[in-house]
Length: 102
Image (cartoon, rainbow, N blue to C red; front, side, top):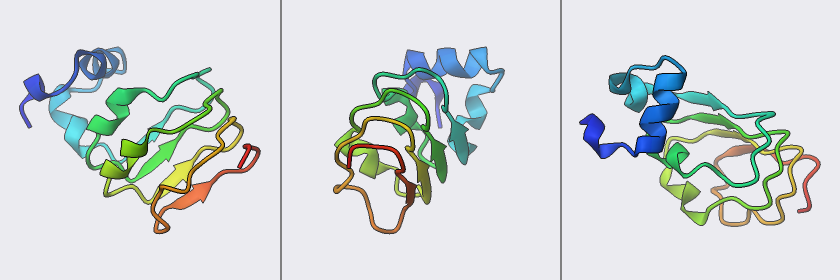
């Protein structure tokens, strides 16, 4: 994939984490736990091959409905947040939603 198709936020994150922009499309797992996130980082949706996403121990109140575009996602950890609705997520995703407001 051409790196000009990626958002600047994603490219900045990749540079900070010493990830070559050519490898972004191959990333299968991301861990954003304990990052004090208040909102879901939209650039995560650009990881089209993502299979596992850890967003645990943050301050998230909601997930974007377009999270469903991550068709490869198999595991999602959203434990220890303030999320109230995940009904739109696929039943095929293994979800840890402990300690939320569901």
